[in-house]
Length: 209
Image (cartoon, rainbow, N blue to C red):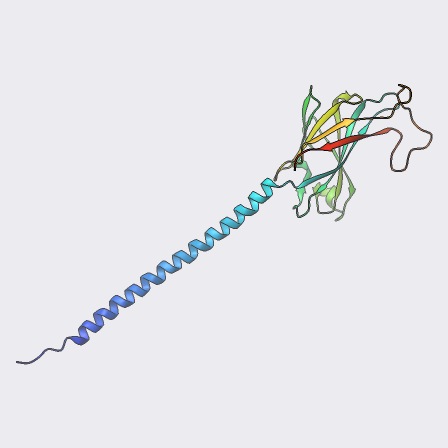
C-alpha cells in the first residue's frame, strides 16, 4: 500500500494561521498605540486647562483710593494689576471686576456700563495698550468709580474675574486717612514722594491662598 505524505499541507495551514495571528496582533497593537496617543494628548490638554482654571492669572500689587480736596471719602478706586508667573496673555476686554461695599454690588466690564478704565503703566511689548492684551511683565491700572463714596474706616471687597483661569484673590480693603484734631486733611503744599496730596492709600488685607 502506498503511503501519502501530508506534512507539507499541514505546514502550509499552520503557516497561514500563524500569519493571520500576526496580522491581527499588529492591527490590535496599532489600534492600542493610536488610542494611547490620543488619550495622552487629551490628558495633557485637560491637565493644562485644569491647571489654568484652578490658578489665578492675575496678581493685584496695589490698591489706591482717590478723593477730592474737601472730603476724606473715596469716590474712585485704582488697582495695579499684573500677570502671575507663568500666566499666558490675557484679554483685558474680557475681565470683569466685581465690587461690593456691603450695600451695593457692581459688575464692571470694559464695554458695558458700569465700566472700568484700563491704563498701561508698563507696556513691555509696546502693543498691550493698543491691543488691550496683558503680557508678562506688564503693569496695568484699572480704575472704577464706586456707586457710593467710601467713608473713612469703611471696608470694600473686589474680585477680578478673567476670561480663563481662576479669579484673583478676594480683595478686602479698608479706607484710612490721617486726620488732625478731627479735621479732614486738605492738600499739602508739597506731596510726599510717590503720593499725590489728593490721594489716599487704601490699606489692603488680602485673604485666600
